[in-house]
Length: 165
Image (cartoon, rainbow, N blue to C red):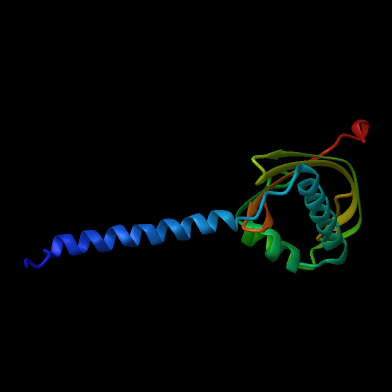
């Protein structure tokens, strides 16, 4: 009786291995968590926006470390941009003080279940290095889903004219 060649043995092992791999892949598909519906996503984003408001008022810099996406980019009303590291440093400093943050007219648009663009108006009372920046603002926040967490990927604030407030 002739011994099977090494090629035949390897082919048999690969075929058997691909069956095991396919079974594992199929099992992973079955255990996948169903995506949340739009109401649940909007609720999650509203909670995050409220936690952001609370972090501003309480001076909780840990919020920024936990919720900013790694490639975060922000633009403030003065046209200054900041990445994640600069934003965390800013909110760790005593230079920024918020006394009031009142949100209104929040809207959210969901894209593919893993990206949300949230907009809101806000009336803020606060200061930076003693300079008052109180007034009305329009905010745009882009939230992206990373695993099971939502991360703030981009934000922009625009100061509203007195007539628009």
